[in-house]
Length: 338
Image 1 (spheres, helix red, strand yellow):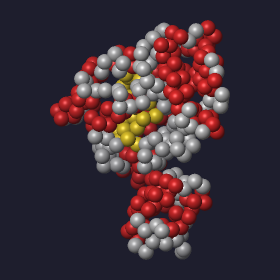
Image 2: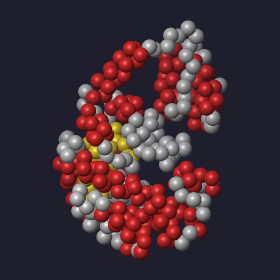
Image 3: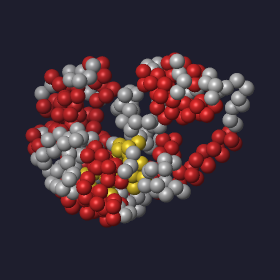
Image 4: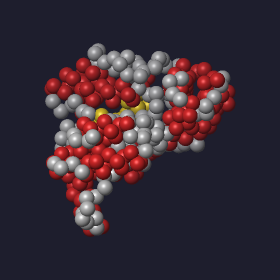
């Protein structure tokens, strides 16, 4: 029986098929209280992208003019708001979860998803989208920008002129992390093997993009499999954001993993305060989250030791170096490839 917004959330959390989502939508439309019906529709839409309630009998569908007017009004409201909007865009295993959680705490920002409209920021993995490319969904971005309390998002996102235009229009502050690629690969290997043991065999590809026998492979073969999936991302991440910045399309806030995360966050605390703190109270909270009080144990932080990537040798190491050599005219990548 669905009679409250909490009931909608409970049923949608358990729903497994599109038919299940439709049943919840039908039940919401039968609620007698119009206000409760609206609340339940909003909650249902936010909790799962497959929740689509049926139109009430006699309801006329939107025409194109009405729809474009609604979209333009939503864009205007989102673009002219004064809330704080932040996005941490980084490769996996670069300390990005720690940075996101720390900034969320320091600035009192809820964590949201910008790749789909979700009530919980990381639910995209539970919806089968863990291996989906991270690209901004305009509906999710507009919705987040209309939040009264601002937001912070955390994604593994590439740069592009289109994304830079979105960030400019909606005043989205973009924070990027730079870390040695070989160290990230070793950390990603640890993370993948640990979590494979906690997931059903059939989920290995859609969650991690690796073969079912990944954990039984030797180290060099595992790194080769990770490169099959991730090398293009590493290359495109650094080249795309570097080019977008050099062309004046965006002004990201770069963070060095080695110097400002694993090497101690005090210097980072000062830079974040200077760039983003609006009040003395925020400056104090940044110092508490990233300064001496900052700790990485409360997130899924691995060993975080610089130099572990030296274990990657031979063909795997040369494969990474050769990929970046094609773009040696863009920047000096030596710190990423040491």
